[in-house]
Image (cartoon, rainbow, N blue to C red; front, side, top):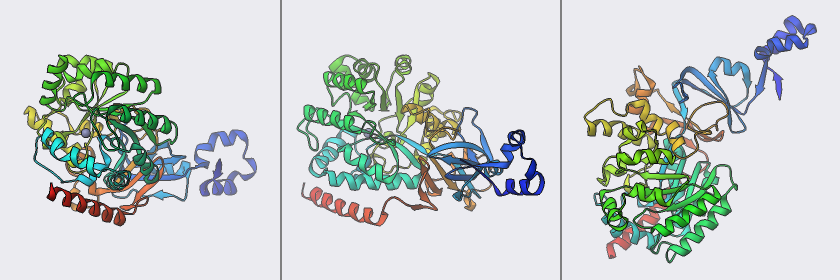
Length: 475
Ligand SMILES: [Zn+2]
C-alpha cells in the first residue's frame, strides 16, 4: 500500500494540487510517494556481501514482511519508504548476520568441562559418558537456550546443529527467533534416549518428517555422527531417506588423521571418498574436512558438498588445519563453524573469522593466504552457499531474508577506520554487536536480548554444571 509522505503532501498542496495527472504521478512517483515498510535499519557502513563486494557509506535497508525490500543510501531509503520503526546507524556498521555451519548447541552446558585432550580421549572419557548420564529433554532446552542467547549476542543469525532431542532444540529456536538447520544425531552405539542405530534412525526420520515445512525458520535434517561411528550400510540408509525428503545431512568428515587410518584400514578408502560413495546426490554439510586429499577436490565440488571449517576446535584438539584456500580455489563450497562449546569453548563466529584469517597465514608462511574479505565471506555469503541457503541469506540484497546485524564503532580502539572489512576481521569483536535481526524481527536491540531471559538461563546452566561436577568427582 502506498501513502503520501510529508514531502509529497507539501509538493501537492504548494504547487500542483489541481493538476496531478496520471502522467504526473508516473513522472514523480519515486520522489513523491513512499511505500510503507516494517523497519528501516541504517549504518555508517553497509557491508552488503553482494557479488560486487559493495559497501555503502551512510546506507540503509528497508524491510517488509521479513524480506529486504531495498539496500541503498540512507537518504534515498528514507525518501522512498516510510515507517515509524527506524534503527539509526550513526557510528554503526550493518552487515549480514553470521552463519555458523557446524555446532552442537546444547553442549554449551559442557563449556570448559575437559580441555587439552586428544579427540578420542576427550570423546570417550568425558563427552560420551557424561552425555549418556545427563542428557535429557530438559537439559537440552537449557543448553539450547544458552546457545541461542550467546549466538544472538555475538551476531549469529543462522546455524547448523547436530545434537540430541532435535525437536526440543527446534522448539527453542522457534521461540528465540534464530534460523537453523537442526539435524537429528544418529550413531551405531547407544546414545541418550536410544539403544543403538535402529531406534535413533527411526526417531530421526520421524523428527524430519514432522518438522518439514512446519516453520519457515527451521529446516530439519539428518545427523549421522561420522564415518567411524556409523557403518556404511547405515550411512546409505540415511542418504536414501534424506534424498527422498530433500533434507540436509550434517556429518563430521576427515577430522583427524586417526579417522583417516580407521576408515582406510576398514574400508580401504579415505574418509571423504568413503562418505561420498555412500551419500550420493545428497545435500551434505561436512564438518571439519581437515584431511581431504587434493585428488578428492573435483568430486567434492561436483557433489556440491559444503565443507565447514572449524579452526578453533581443530586447533584446540590439534586435529590439523583444513586446506580452506585450496578448497575455495577448487570451487568447493566452504563455510565456517564453531563446533560445540565443549571443544571451542564458545559460539563466537567473529573469533572464528579472525582465527581463520590468521591461522592459514601462519601455517603457509604466506600473509596473502585467506585475505580478510574471504574470511568474512566464509561466515556470510560463502557460508550460506555451503549450507545450501545461497539464494536467501548471507548477503544484504533485495529479496533476501532480513537477517542482519549492527555493530557499534564508537570505541576509541576501533579508530581510525581506513577499511571496514579489515576492521571487521582484525579489530572488531563480537562485543560490538548491538543489534541482531532475523526475518525482519529484532531479537536484540542496544545489546538487550528480547526473546530470552538471560538471568534465568544462567541460573539453570549453573545448576546443571554443579550436578555434573559432583558426578565427575565421584567417577
Ligand atoms: Zn562437531
